[in-house]
Length: 95
Image (tube, rainbow, N blue to C red; front, side, top):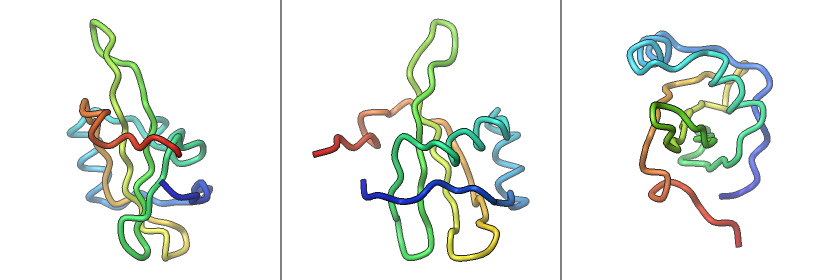
């Protein structure tokens, strides 16, 4: 995944708030991914997906929190976010 700067200022769209609540995603978790993403990829002009790994659940399992952001506006807008257990599918090895 290419080098994309972290997101400092953003707003959550109504859709993002709804989906975060439905999916059990805390705003602090989204803020962490946006300020210090492990990976980021441009999915189309103006939209970037930021992602980081988290251990969660009982027993602990590795998940990705993927956050889709429209970065072509000020402030940037979080469009949606979701947890994925398919780390291998979305994780890109560097190099």
